[in-house]
Image (cartoon, rainbow, N blue to C red; front, side):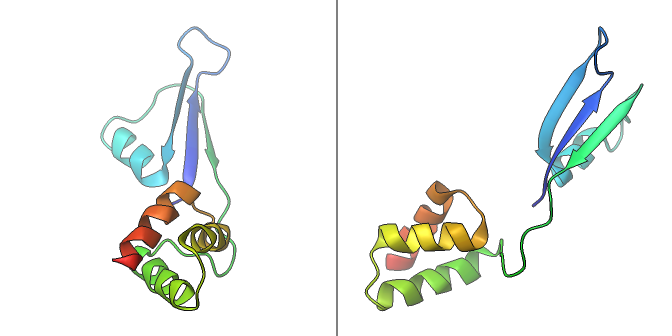
Length: 98
């Protein structure tokens, strides 16, 4: 999931700035294309080895927990590896403990 920002009519009366994932923006403007001058800014690709797959992260969390790592440390490690918010990863780590 790549973050993006669509900015329309910057510095004008009808200025509009919409943020979301590329999919969300495509859904929003799929049937109703934006009018006027448009700038699309897309977040960079994830680093090599980064993953968005929750199942893979849960399995990795199980391995870290089995090695004796605390849930907090496992969440910190996985958040750094996956480049996802720690609070989201912590929920996956808690799911892996069950």
